[in-house]
Image 1 (cartoon, helix red, strand yellow):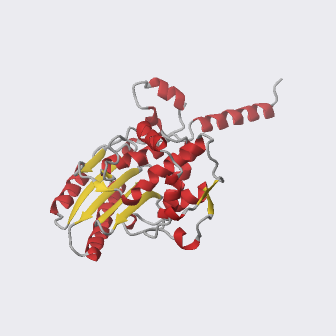
Image 2 (image 1 turned 45 degrees about the vertical axis):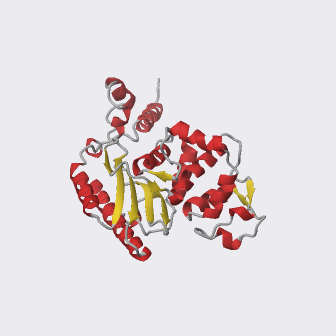
Image 3 (image 1 turned 135 degrees about the vertical axis):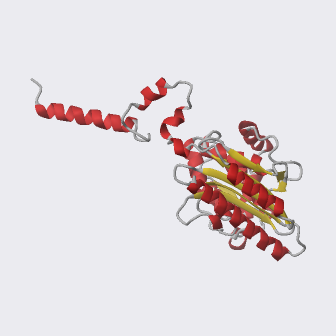
Length: 313
């Protein structure tokens, strides 16, 4: 005869297994696998996303962003906005190309991590700093490390992403081959990412962030690591101005003061409604300080409206 204690234990085990089966679903009143099987023509991810968070209507925000872009006389601006749950998106001036500046550091970091993923490099492997790597335009590495200093792969990737350090970026890039760089382009389908002038569109660059978010180029642990480092960026001058403190924002920014270029692309992890936002601006004023001021203000306005739209749906 089965004792009561055995029955209780058995029921607990069943309940735990059922909880684990549907712990990320919006409701645990059913078996998730059964529900997916019940609707074979529906996206399986639909079981994990509430209907109100599967956003497709962006018309009012689209109208606003086109109005902003159309009224700007002091800058050229291109914007790409996409809800990652559904792929619903907005492209403003999608064919405009901008000098990529420090945005180029993220694809290089992804190629480096691909070598780590393949076991060709380890995170604690070291690369040496050469005279040709020193670059004072962005970052502090060049100030504190004499030629010949050795850095781990992890130190260099973190510096390139979190601090946008040019010296770290050049060390990494020098140790990669053109075939390895092209491997990323082939894998993600980014044949139009950078042209011969190192210029890029907002929409194409956003696909880099989506490749990390979906872990379609790197495995999840490596995509997660890069995204974590991207959330540690301290620079607050551009899109971060429109996002409340405490909301994770994985992003890469860039600027080229001489060319009046100001760019940033990132993923805003609004709860249950994550979206990607890329804004690229080229100033037309003759004063560099005024161009930078205008870019910061416009970035803040666009980011604030994008966040408010996600919040208010």
